[in-house]
Image 1 (cartoon, rainbow, N blue to C red):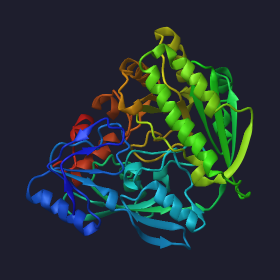
Image 2: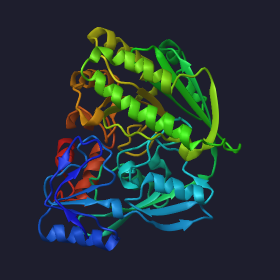
Image 3: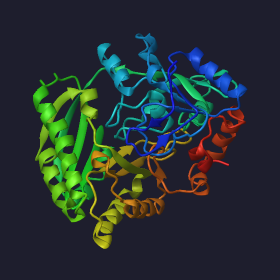
Image 4: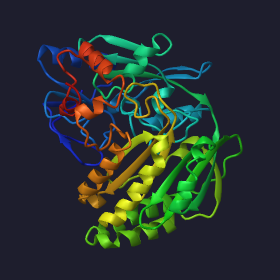
Length: 440
């Protein structure tokens, strides 16, 4: 078991300096760590890939458990398409295992570096009203609770308890294993089209018709990429590694990061950068391609960033987008592209942002080119107030300005979750400052 003293998250937005950093590789080691923490009255905080830019995984005391070595397949039931993995297994490894066995995940977000435990704990989602977030693909998961015992949450046995716990914010214990329901392998037929802002507003019924879809809006350009996809068994189009590297890595990351750094000295140049990068990366009249599900959903995103994303009831989408657009001219903000607009069906998980209602997710971004922090605090706060006026619920892995009282009023089962948290962790072994800010 290796140890260290400092841990930094992916975006380098915070540093943890616990008493000890440990990298377990077995469930027995995890149980022993919990028992040791009990014996020495220490706190525990668990981290996966560290992609969250919120402080959900931050700690400066006790044990910080990094799950990067706890990432193996435990069991595969090919007949029933069930895959059980250790909690630190990345979404990418799960997707690649699925492809190797002619199976797939039903939905994915844009990045797959996250651990499965971190992804379900924060409500990670893709886009499309016909396919649920990642937590809805979970059949069962095992948690090592504060007393060192294993507790199984299984939707087939107790759906109410399962839904209460699955988006658990790391508050209930250590997720040791996760069983996922896979689906038959499929390709994605993807179509991308450029729209104006007004055309995007006119197409807000598209989520009800498209199997998967999203908008990527480039502020200050009046341009939006409308991305939609359907499952297909058509043959995959051949890829060019060199072309993919040039488009995704060189243009999408290296060139964009250089532009972001240059405009950090003169914010008035950001609209020109957005216009240039949209033309280089996203400009299309109509473009179709067929790829495997993993390549279709994901993109390599290398530039460090700060992100705020809220889920709003889908009927509030137009009002919120129009208000954000007016904000740019009213306050003369010059902001980074893209603003991502995605959709998800209602989710019965108690702390899902889409709990009980079909949801539109809107995400804004502030890049950190070469690690340079660019102050967009006022922009984030102003957009937060727009979301808050329309019943917005924050993504747990991203920025929010809500108080615990405000959050408690947004989730009908908030108090029930808090009771479960107190029951499984009465001495708050797994509670850090982030969770203290949320719960009494």
